[in-house]
Length: 186
Picture 1 (cartoon, rainbow, N blue to C red):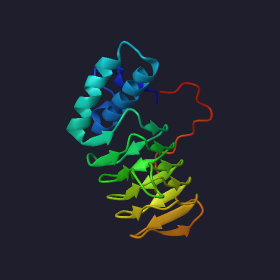
Picture 2 (picture 1 turned 180 degrees about the vertical axis):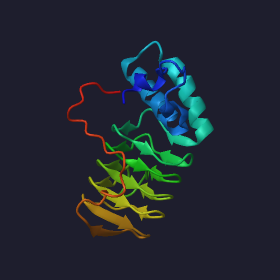
Picture 3 (picture 1 turned 90 degrees about the vertical axis):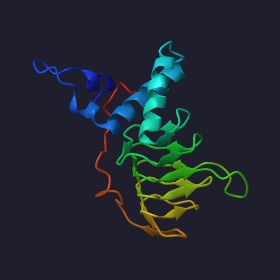
């Protein structure tokens, strides 16, 4: 669904599209518009920024406009999501409430995490430091990850333990979107 379709009114009923009723969909829609306006240095940036800041505070998301976020991001529950502005999130990733994607300032793991495509981050999971999380990875709830994780893996516990599994996110990621045939992006 394209962003502009979410606000289109239905014929006859005059009702707003169901996706805009969801607080998470509303936040992500405004987030993408604010991010797009900032990159393009649009005159509408200030308008989108005000709405973005309001929704960010209201719903408890710390997802900054500087963060590189791939398409297909799914936030499952309201509130408590904290993402460092220098972190990178790939396409078709899923974040649950209470998850932290943060940086470390010093030491051998200094920096912010880079998540690959189709990464599932469970409730209250923490990914910290300059680690690289591969594609198709499930990070279990309440896990603490401060090590690199190869693709096609399941990570759990504190300290993090890694188990290799092909198609790890097969039953976890429900929003997989195929972007190969799509020409417009926001």
